[in-house]
Image 1 (cartoon, rainbow, N blue to C red):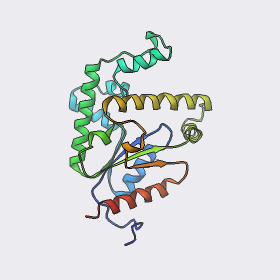
Image 2: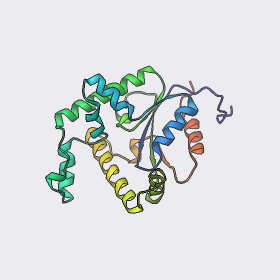
Image 3: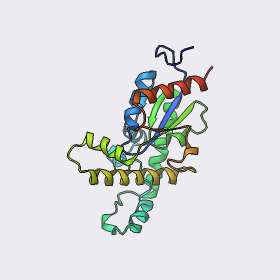
Image 4: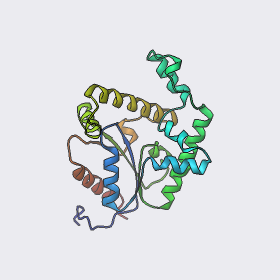
Amino acid sequence: MNTNDPKIKMPHALITIGRQFGSGGRELGKKLADAFGYKYYDKELLSEAAKKAGMDPGFFEKNDERAPSFINGIFSFALGLTPNNIYTGSTSISDDSLYRAQSDFIQSLAEQGPCVIVGRSADYVLRDNPRTVNLFVHAPMDNCIDRIISREPNLSRDKAKARAEKVNRLRSNYYNFYTDKTWGAANSYHLSLDTSLLSMDDITEIVREYILRRFKD
């Protein structure tokens, strides 16, 4: 069987994508969803979870993949930032409610059919589902900076690097706080992919091959 044949029907799988900022995680997620005929979810999880929890979607935007505010406050203080520079617009209780709402919604998505979910520690939320395929997407910083600037040409390389480092720190804090795993560590995922080495088309075929071989049923 030629597993690279795009006409082959893909098995039911739930692809989760953890990613470094600027590494192309969302681009890959959309490409996988299109190629495999899966549904795709990233930030729309926020508004859907907000509606289900009866909360203001704006609250979710401000807390997008951020650990509870007191945790980020501790890290900010360690970096020498003053309390006035630290966002304190939520409490640990509301952050936990947010996480539970998102987790419930992710579980409901998994019950509806095959899909690609970017971020939100979806790999951990779906850890007991045998159809889950967990990816982590990364790239050298220079490549991430190039991708960030391609989206925002007015950014300097220094500012793009600073943004990447900040977002990665927030994502890492969020993931490490809410799970018993380590963000970006190889043993937290099934496949770790460096997007600087292969095209998105090539990476898509690697993931296709993995899914077809793993779910032969």
